[in-house]
Image (tube, rainbow, N blue to C red):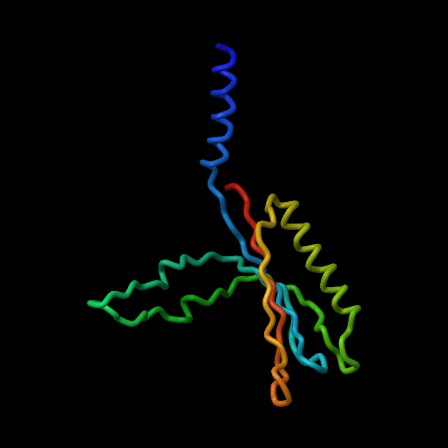
Length: 149
């Protein structure tokens, strides 16, 4: 009888975890890789929610009506923005700037963790200088956090 009760208790604990509601939050860092330090670098995160369903339409063979969502309704005006340093200055790549950005990003991650968030995924991408006539470039990283509601 004790073994059955013990097994039932363990099963109940595992089922509680699977029934827990989870919420996610995305924090994005954008770091400029524009030569000469002319770009802008930031950590940004939304302070208001959007429901993707409000801006989504389904299309079929019979009904291929264009999505008529207004871009202005999608925009988030309440957000947090943390200034970062650009990777380059007039002298070229600036390693002190990269380390300073690492310190700020680590601080943001540590703050999120202390608020009960868990870093679940990280995704990075680069759009870099494509040659003589292209002085643009960014290094973007999305940090996806989750926590139980």
